[in-house]
Amino acid sequence: MLRSRSLSLSALLADRSVHITAERARQRGIPIVLVGGAVRDALLDVEPGDLDFAVQGDAVRLARQCADALDGAFYVMDAERGVARVLLPAMEGRLAQVLDFVKCRGESWKADLLERDFTINAIACDIESGDIVDPLGGCADLASRTLRCVGPRSLQDDPVRGVRGVRLAHQFGLSIEAQTWRAICESAAAIGRPSAERVRDAFLDLLGLDRAAAALDDLWRAGLLARILPELAPLHGVTQSPPHVLDVLAHTFAVVQAEVGARAVLDARLSEPLRAQLAAHFDAVAVEGRHRTVLFRLAALLHDVGKAHTRSVDVDGRIRFFEHEAVGAKLAAVRAGELRLSGQAVDVVKRIVALHMRPNQFARDVQAYTVRALHRLAQHAGDVLPDLALLAICDCMGKSGAAESGAAVDCERSLDVAAALVELYFTRYHESVRPAALLTGTDLIALGVRPGRRMGRVLDAVREAQLAGEIADVAAARALAQRLLGEIDA
Image (cartoon, rainbow, N blue to C red; front, side, top):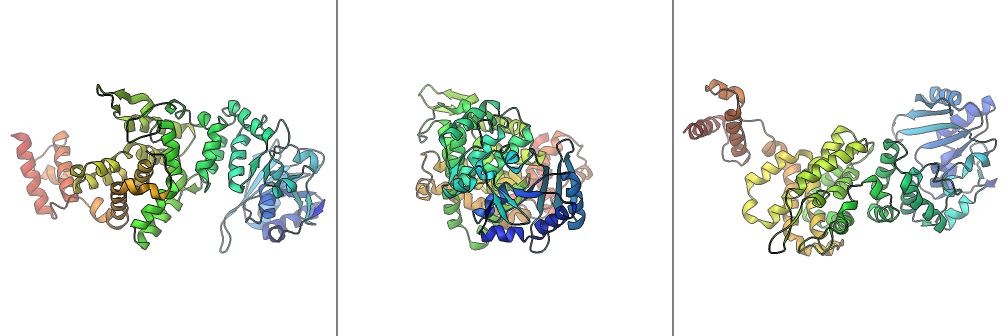
C-alpha cells in the first residue's frame, strides 16, 4: 500500500458519504475500499463523481444501512453477485450522487482489481487509512498518461470496455498502449453481445466529450463505430458533386468536427442574451441524464445516412440525393430506437435529420427565404430549431472538410439564416410561431363548414397567413376563410 498525498483524494475521503460508509463498515468489521473512477479522478485532481465501493462481505446489507444513514434511495442491482446502489438526491452545494456497493470478486483486493478493465481504473483506496492499493501499476500509467488493459481477457469478457477505453483516452489525454489498442479493435466483433443499454451508455458518454470528434475517429478506426451505427459504413466511397470535395462518410466526420468552429462563428453573430440562451439549450439535460449536445452530435452523425440509398446521376453527370433527408430520418429513428433512447429523444434526432436541409436551402435560394417559409420551418421544427441552425453551419463548413471557424467565410448566407433561426426561436417563438389560433375548427363549423379535408386546408392557410403577419385579428381571419372557401368551391 502507498500513502496518497493527493489533496483531491483527501477531500474525497472527507466527503460525508464516504465518512458514513467507512463508519458503518467499521461497525460491522467489513473491509471496504473505494475503487475505480472516483479514485482515478481524485489522483488526477479532477472532481470525482459517483462512488464505487468493493466490499469483502455482505455488500447489499451494508448498502442498505448506508442508504438509511444518508437518507438515500436503496436498490438491489444484482442479488446473486451482491451488487446494490444508493442514490442520494441533489442538495444545496452538492449534486446528486450514486454510490455502488459490489461484493469483492476475489479473496483479496488484488484478485478483485484483476477483474477490472484498465490499470488506471484498478486503483483502490482504503477509506479508513487513505492508503492506495495499486498492484497493477495504475498510478504509474496515470503519471505517464498511458491507457493499458489489466490483462489479455479484460476486453474479451466485456466488449463495452473497448468503447470506454477510447473515451477514457480522449477524456484524460492518454496514449493507448499497443496491445491495448489491438484488444480494443478485437472487441468490435463482439460489441453486439452486451445489452443495447450498456452500449448506448458507453457511446453517449463518448459523445459528451469535449474532444468527441477525435474520439469518434478512433472509434471508427477500431471498427466499433461501424458496429454501433451500421448506417455509416455504406457512406464510405459515396461520392458527391461540387462544392463537396469529400465522400459522404468523410463529410459526415467533417460536419461533427466543425461543431466547435460553427459555435464560435454563430455566437459572434448573436447578442449576449441569445448566446446565453443558445448555450443553455445545448447544456439542458435531454438524453439519459446527458446534455442536449449529445443528441445533436448523434443527429449530426446520422444526418446524411439516407444518401447511400438515394444516390442518382443526371445525364450531365451531376450527382443527386433526392429525398435523402426523409429516408435518413426513418433510418435515424430506427437506429436511435435500437440504442434504446427514449421516445422523445428518438423524435428529436428524427426531426433534426428530416429538416436539416431546409436552412441551407434558404441560404442558397433567396426567393425561397420568405417570412412564410421561415415560420413554416419553425412550426415543423419546434424545439430543434436551434439544433438546425447550428447543423446548417456545420454542414456548410463540412463540404470542404475544414473545421476551423475561418472556414466559415464561404458560409455567410448559412450564418445569416442560422442567426435568424436562433433569434426567432428565443425571442419570438411563442408570440409569432405558436400564438393562439385566430380561427378554429369550431369557428368554421359555425360558418357551416363540415369537418374534413376542406376544413383542414382552410385552417392551414389561415394559420400560415397569421404567422406571416398578413392577418392579425379574428375578423380578418374569418374574411380570409370565407374567401378561401369560395375559391375551393368555385
